[in-house]
Length: 451
Image 1 (spheres, rainbow, N blue to C red):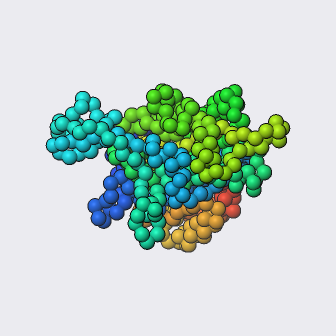
Image 2 (image 1 turned 180 degrees about the vertical axis):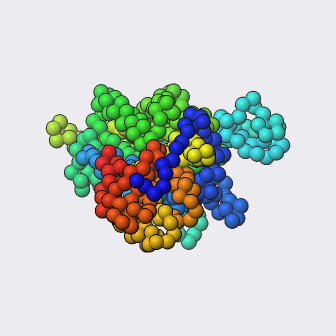
Image 3 (image 1 turned 120 degrees about the horizontal axis):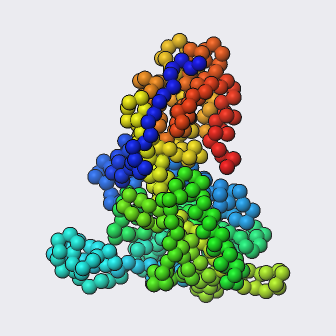
């Protein structure tokens, strides 16, 4: 038997206990997400990921990379530059089309996106608005010591164009055959006029995008489009998002991007309503056509079976790391009562949890802390683990529950006699004993990296 009694819990009081305010407060209090430049009062809609947030973000990207690249033989990875030749954005249409219509209030000087204003009056003061004008969302900067028109470059607004610029390089070096994909995750920048809702819409963010190249045939395009919509929807469900919090929304013709032949969004039910989580788009050969025209390079694919050259069509699943993190945080958040005390718990899929296991000595004497440190070092060779010896064992469990740690390992009197420990499960709170030597294999299996 364990040296401490098992916990008892009562069910969560609500199906969806979280509000955005609760989540933001938890994230700051527990080192998941901080306001950027906090000591200077912050900088609008920019965020820093703290020690636990950095781990969570890395786990989200690794889970995506594993699903999209590592476990597939038809997708390769890429990491392209943030700064690309300025002609890239002329060819892609971003200089001409990547705009928001803006209006200004003549009274309070507030600025709004025209499509977010109802009634033709200022939503702040009711004042008269200016005529709408287009504003390009790309961040502009200068390369080199001279700030003139010849040295203008842009921070990329999407990672996709780096993939299209490297299409020929990948074909020449990787011996890929259609259908195949090129995937990458990385920073993008958009000078959003109305960012907000925590990390949902920010000016600096990370994307996870894949361009999947197929034969230029409507039937092939339709088949692979449906395939990737299903794959991407299932990925969220398989990593802990409840299916009822997700829906598919095909775009109307008048809202399609300039490059899109058809787009379906995977939307998530945020506390502020349904919002885009990921988009799956049919880009056709638009990008390869444009870059071939602007660069003068041959961006065709030689089909050995058909003995023909053509530019493939593209299916693009594009997700935001930050929005994905937000969805996982929101769906993991829960509140219940354990031994008559309220508990906040993040029920992350163990694969995503920032800390996989926490090690606790039951007492701060009798050699238990030293033994616990040995166990910690052993586990850290396999995955992120934490150590805590401050306060009651119940209080320590709560602290780890609050950041989503799925497993607790307690060193107690019996450990010192037979080298066994108590392993506690975050969700069921079941406690079982294992030999210390068996812990790495047992926990690795429970984390489920094989899934």
